[in-house]
Length: 293
Image (tube, rainbow, N blue to C red):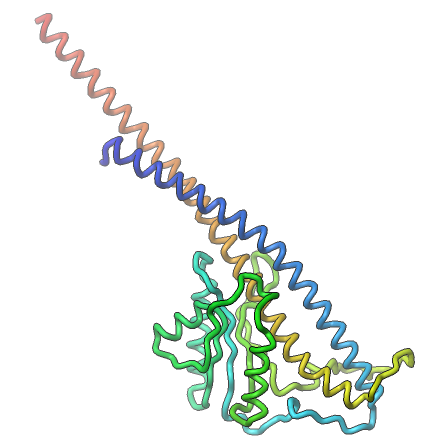
């Protein structure tokens, strides 16, 4: 059994680590609250955009509104996958789950040509570690996902699709549900389909309160690229909120474990110290009896 000096050293180290993990948990919780607000606001924007598209579709009923971003290519042989991951560690299985999904998706698409566009340092590190080639990697990004160059991401995707370099574009990210729930999700963003354009089973109606200028067709063509950007921005905000939630949960668990370990070490220290005191008392008593004898 270790001596009291060694136990005291380990106890001090565990308590110091507990302070660090507790502070990191609080920081992640504060960042998560801001990220959740951004996710909520972004979803409200996306909803408003879909409502505008629904009204455009109703206004243009009978018109042939086709856009290059809507072109479906069958069969789809080439794909671009935009992977959004974390830039730092200490967030539990978050980055590991993204890496596992990359590998499972690569196996699923083994017979097809797949290009990878990576957002975040960890996806880049994963691909370099396993030797997987990628098109581009954005690793030096601001901590706030609202400041990410989403227009640049979308331009890369649209350029590859419109030039015929790929037939489909997907985004792979962790969809945020709550602080304790997130799902690694693969969403298709190109070509745009009826679901992306606000279509549903109910036939959209014209309110008669909106005047579209210069024309419905031109406005439709201008709004469509915003759908791609809104989907990418939403995925980035979801991914960042999921990262903060994972880090907060991981640091909470680490803080609890450090506290439990500190209690065990304190009990061990007390036992060793008490054993030492008892041994010293026995030596003193034995020495006193020897002198008397």
